[in-house]
Image (cartoon, rainbow, N blue to C red; front, top):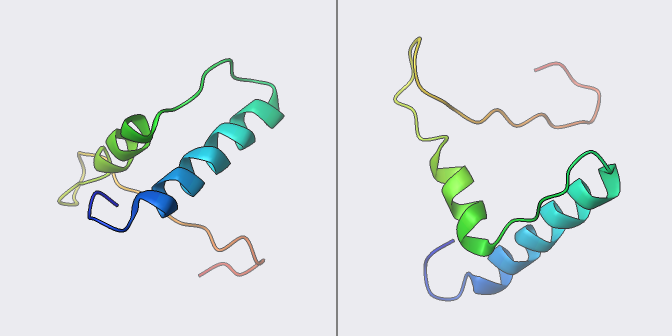
Length: 64
């Protein structure tokens, strides 16, 4: 999302994340575009027992 032409997508994701955490009411924070990119970068793990990685749940009721 750092590449040229991806700024609109990054802005949409940033807006969605901020709307979601605001609507939840549990958080009193907001993310900048750079904050979103940093959070995504934190998921760059090589795998194994240490490090962080992202898991995407399709939220459609499937378990795989």
